[in-house]
Image (tube, rainbow, N blue to C red; front, side, top):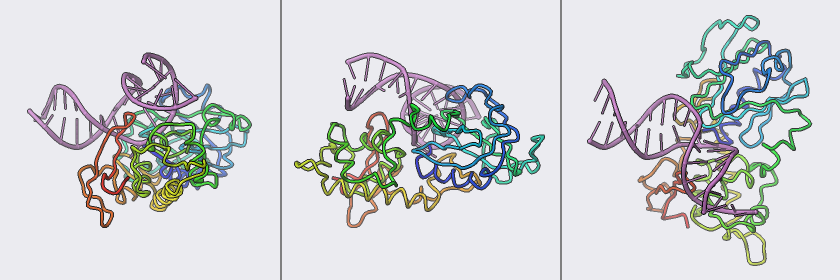
Length: 295
DNA sequence: ACTGTACCCTGTAGGC
DNA sequence: TGCCTACAGGGTACAG
């Protein structure tokens, strides 16, 4: 579900209700999501104060006063909802203040914050998970150790893409989906970035490398396209498909900007391209692209 | 070492 | 209406 722009939007929605606040009560309504919740999950969070929130790839990291970090991943269908709560006794004062359409049956974890909000984790498919990792172990933890560069950071360059492509023989789609290369891209934004760059998802990654070993113009275009697509998506609060919502219940807007994703059979929007959007399966996932302008 | 497949789980859309 | 299949934003354990 959530790719980088959606996780970034969730982060921004949670910051105002979590930063500087204590966990008063933590109520796991189910002990296992994708993995079991950490031992004594509630006990280790209750009383701790949130110092700050960060995002790495598609992970949310909530840093605590205790030196631990609550690491959360939303999987395919995870979402956070914010309710106005009473705090100490955990009774809901106003119920859902926003009509989000969420099914309460899938509210798996409730964080009651000292500021008077309840942060509810809802996840029908339960592919999401939560972990507690020591701050000092974060960088070397198996989840983060092998992650590639942040696509919106300074490390994503045409040189980096070309160098990463040297050791590989896959196509561009699989290459960009690989979190060890670029961390945070998913199916939607890879499809959109490749369309923006005018590159076919079937093309070999070797097209990024010059014979001298340096980056090609295609590599430059790809970097610019990734940045552009992600930035535009974050600006409108990510994409809302099916059940994804912001913590405040609002929908994202980027689904209205899709050029190829979910548009199989429709006309390419690029002018003067007259191609139609195709859907193919690559590595078991749908790829949408225009056979006309993506070469 | 790399690449593709099956799988975790639930909900929804579309065909009949 | 119901039943069936295919498919969904992710990541991992395997087999080849």
